[in-house]
Length: 415
Image 1 (cartoon, one colour):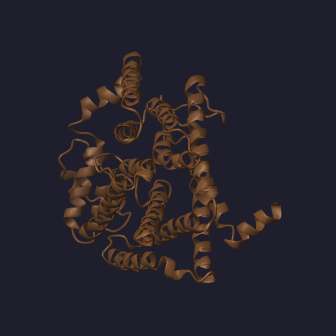
Image 2 (cartoon, rainbow, N blue to C red; image 1 turned 90 degrees about the vertical axis):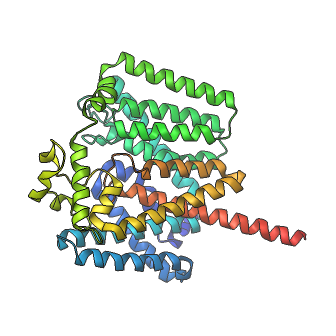
Image 3 (cartoon, helix red, strand yellow; image 1 turned 30 degrees about the vertical axis):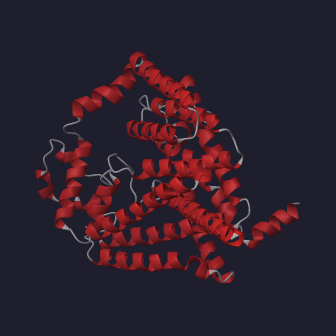
């Protein structure tokens, strides 16, 4: 048995074992995440040439060549070549990491089952650990909450809600494969939503709550169950806000007080001004942190103009348009529209896969909805969630295309 396990993994140069560790590497920190993703990327390239399957990924490589050409143009016009060069290389590495996950999903037996199981266990672990931190003031590692913000196993990083919301829907693929009743999945999402609210992460709470609403509307369960779940969620949220002044302050009073002007508005306005000065190619990947120091951006319409500088503008679309210009944002929007079109089309015509398609769509909504504050796209920690999503989407697209092709072929044979 052990020998067969070794032989199976040896065939793919143990690439799947590296990827299996990714959900926990995200928790541990950036260094192990970079190490594992880099190793998986290198092994993928070796496998491509060793197994002579370049043609299977030819379209992805053609897109990569186009991306490299674009990155070179962006680099030429960057206001800081050194910063942009480093980030461009990291971006290409993560593109290969995305292909490594896609290769594993497409070519390794039971990889999707095992990987989504690991995702589910990792998400469940973060939920349980964070609940322990909430009720006992410390998690199982001894980490305390920070200023009424839950951090769970992340220590000093306030990203519990981001981690759960960005991975939980993908992890549900495991429950679909195991044919777990959709009602149990609904209950798990409620437990996760309450925890995310308790974490005091406003953006994650709003995005996950909205995605859950979409999920409940389109999931295939009886209407009375949907109404019951919706009523329970609304009542729970009302109780949380009425009996905990911290939640009310964080989710109601602060937004009401600062909605007209705040430090995020200063970031947004600065990004827009940077774009105006670099319309075609942007200021260069990851150069917002450099460009924002320009004194002329002190004239933005915000009393927080002195707080305008940060590592990124905290909005995905403003980050891309300010750092890559019109060329970058058009490419990004085209990819997004392609994904939406494929998901909606297949949801309508393939009833058998509706819940899995819905999970992918909810994950897409959380990651790419433009009206939210976000982490950086061109980063190691936050960026990894996007590349994992892309791998799952294109694997789903491949499986759906094969299903439709098989049905058409079967139909012809009957005729």
